[in-house]
Image (cartoon, rainbow, N blue to C red; front, side, top):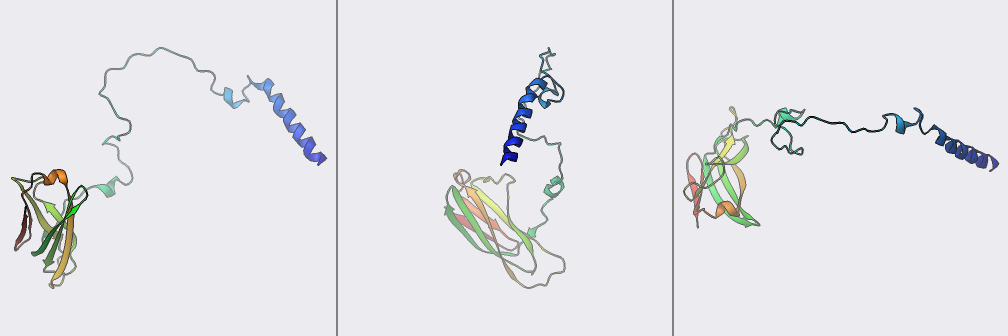
Amino acid sequence: MKRRVFLGLAAAGALAGCGGFRESRANPRNWFGRSRARSRKPEAAQEPVNPLIPKKEETGLFDRMREEKPYEGTFVAEVTDLEIERASGGAIIRVRGRATQQEIYDVRLVPDDPDGEPIGGVLGYQLRAVHPVDAPNRPREVLAAVFVSDKTLENVREIRVRGAQNEHVSRR
């Protein structure tokens, strides 16, 4: 008990004695000194830059994995079913198809228009998948879906999904 009191008083005395070293280099608050104002040349006018948006030329470790490669899918043989289900904020277009091969992968609904907008009131999609070269030729059922917003659906009279052998159409 006496030892704790003595050590506490010694520490308090040492801490109080640091007040004399306020201007010394031993005090970390004095390491950089006081700030001073100085004049500066005005910079040339630049376009406004948002610091929260990264620059395009910057590359990181994972940018190589994010590089988009062109989609290598080809048409699925047959479209067997087309369903349009209402969802909040739009609709979900579900497509069922039949491929002639096993082991196909990366099944997608690829829009006819790159922006996904309707062309002449028709919203068109292609049912595509990546087909391996040496896969067995047995039929396989595939499913794909895409969400379409209400804004896109405003000008749509018809939704069309094409396969290699046929197409399915749904009209309003």
